[in-house]
Amino acid sequence: MNLHMSVRRRVIVSVFFIILWLVSPWCVRAELTTSFNGDTLDSNLHLDIPDPDGVGTISLDTVNHCLLFYGSGADLWNDRNGLPYAWTAIPNVGVGGMWRAETEIQYNVAYHAWGRIAGLTTYSGPDGSGGASMGQEFTFGLDQWDYNDAARVQGLGDNQPGDSGNLAEGLLSDILDLRMDVTVGEGNYNTYDFYYKLPSDSEWSTLGTIHYTSTDDRVALFFKGGDMDVSFNYFNVTAVPEPSSVAMVGSGAVIFWLVRFIKRWNQA
Image (cartoon, rainbow, N blue to C red; front, side, top):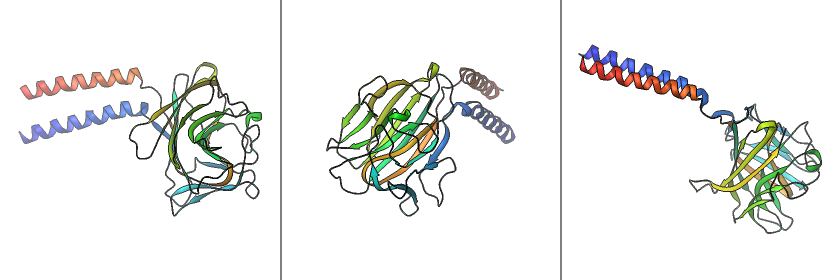
């Protein structure tokens, strides 16, 4: 009897791992997942620093485990003006597929009159490119500009991100988590969904949606404004394709026949 039960358990465990093997390729796949805990940057994270002495630079803070942007700062509108970006390649997903970027921003000094915005953006290389004049469409960030504090998506150059006006939700905080879900459309006419939350919140709040045609190949962390001193506490970029119907049906069939097999075995 003990031998009978042992064989049964082995069969069940084996089938369970077969199901995981079938389904796992269609679950979230990490392109970049980093909390900046090591002594070096993740190999998929790249630093684009056009003017480290005049505008600002980026360094890995191995004590506080964050990515630190610091320097005198500059504006970002029609031109990038030498601001530093930390970027990774946008995941390669097909039409109908989705990719996601998440980060947490933390301002390290008190607010000042000129203002500051830090968060997520997309752009195309080469290094040093950016601003509306070079096709950078929007920024998504913790916006503390002109005392109008908000989670905000802003269209660079015209306050028209994609097919929308600026998206904003007022809040007072020096730390915020941001999430951007991008669904790839026909002809790269993509859908961008934006979310935010405080670190203490369990649920994401929806900020809004924009659509536009994009051929950007980089998703980046950015800062604009004066007296740059901001930390990014993590940066995750993942491909999130929809589950394969073939894999799901196949897994369902395996489970169905496994249940029938166990029932008959118990009756033996």
